[in-house]
Image (cartoon, rainbow, N blue to C red; front, top):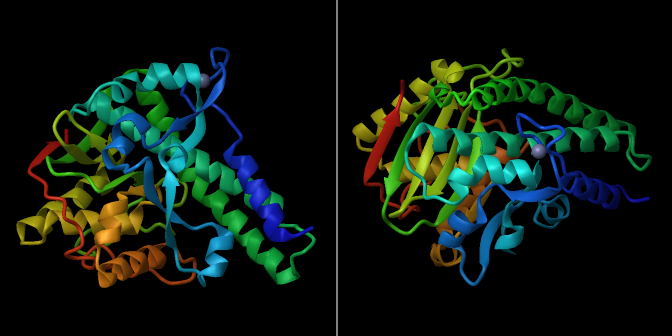
Length: 339
Ligand SMILES: [Zn+2]
């Protein structure tokens, strides 16, 4: 009985364990499907080349081969970003306005994208919690390995509480169709898009390195920001969105980005740094990545490594600088809804 083999099998089992995370889940949930968290029709087709994109590979057996360094792996778009987190009925009904129409910077659409980001994270974190729970007493593990995995399991449990709290806020707002509960800032670009992503973050430090909230102190309720790219009628958008209950952290977070840009930082550099640092769910255009020079690739990979490594401390200044000159996206518009 090999630990790695069992771990991989259990991980796959969790990923394929369909469930419906819709706020009104219940009797009306029908067949479960694999929903795209980065929608396939619009978003991935913008960057896919011959049906493929790059994803960051952090699979346990891959990391063993690369001494822990993340690598980009070419995957088919159908496998690029799926999660079985909604039944077909609820997926079609809820996300119809964003799956079948281009993104517009209005609260209804923003709320749906943000909800999908949140539910995907919920799905992934719930899986991680169950996986660590099932594996922590594996007979092949030494006593210290068991203790370490038990610590991971407890960490996942603590991390899940604020996410669950946020889902309660989002569920309530969507159930009541109260899209006014959402705030956002969106940057638009008419240039080709090279990176598609969606995710969320409990902002700890802002773009100037100032502390916004101490993630270790307030574990049961943390302010949360979601972020995603979305295809527009002309071009695409990079969006930050949050529930009004997270205003206290998210407003100054966005203000710090705006003031960095007002003081000369290039927006595309700041957003790529943010994406590489904070997003676990990317899809990257193959020809763009292949065309980067070696030092740009190294800078991007080592940034991802820094942020995903469990034992390297992340500096307070992680959003202040780094990864400049890699992104070639230019942004030409900004829309905000801060009230
Ligand atoms: Zn359902």
